[in-house]
Length: 268
Image: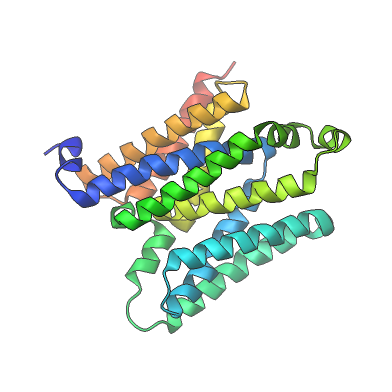
């Protein structure tokens, strides 16, 4: 049985396939902002702080993804405040948030009775565990990200490329930057189920970084990054199916390989 034959015969594989495509939309759009603004370390801080919220939610018997969403948004707001009010200590505070979030999550995991296989899959990624309700959740987050991007495209474009000029034009740069971090937080929540917290930065940045080598406009970068992310996630899932290897790790490896290959192709 080939991979695409299996997709239409096995429900869990179909859910994983659809989830991979939905996640690629968010990673293509928001990842482009991350690459252009060079704030990958902020995205990393948000991603690793999420584990604390997931562990707490799991400990309280609540859905881990609800804890992930709340903690991601809280981390985004905290990083935004640090960025505007304590910029000289920004790296240190983000590193502390990164470590404390991970440590808190691990402690709650340790205190939760039973073997937490589901939570471990969020840490390392297990796309095959996506359920229909997860697809609805990802689709709603995708819709929110797409709507905000379409509504504020010009403003966010100006903030990304020339924040000083945006201030002169009267834009509320601090508010827009906070909104951008919140979009990153939403995207991190989506990607957790695809590649896990450990590899989330790869899918968030590498497709967009690859697209940037071939296009000059932000909109073109978003479209191409979405396409590259779709290819990498589906290919990772197919290789996982045929060779019985972790899909998240394969996806991240493919993203990295495509980026390195593109750099060689575009080398002057």
